[in-house]
Length: 125
Image 1 (cartoon, rainbow, N blue to C red):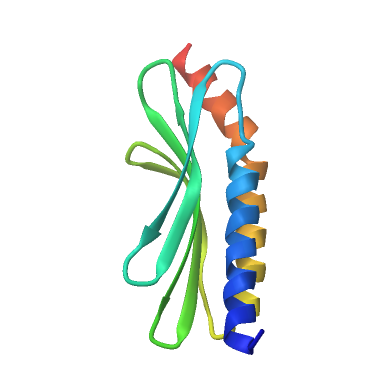
Image 2 (cartoon, rainbow, N blue to C red):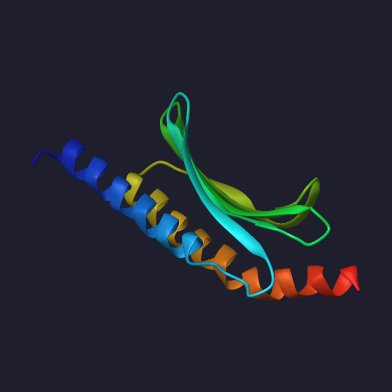
């Protein structure tokens, strides 16, 4: 396998890991669904959406894209228009650095899930 093919394989593996981490998010009192999609021209977003009892949707997501000669990674938690957690957009030159950031951001977003959902449910009462 040449270096470009190896980089593509590593990117797919990292997206699969991030997708799996976020797809495993569950809460006993809130419905959830997983999503993954491509962002033209060269990016992907993956995460989970929880629907609160009042109908608001809470999104836990990470994104990796490329433009020019840099990779861009983002992670966030949003409840409708309210941003609960916005990890800083990181732009890096190398694919290996971008994949490390993607792994870190998926873990950071997932680590905040239970606490975030519990807090939003408490606010409903």
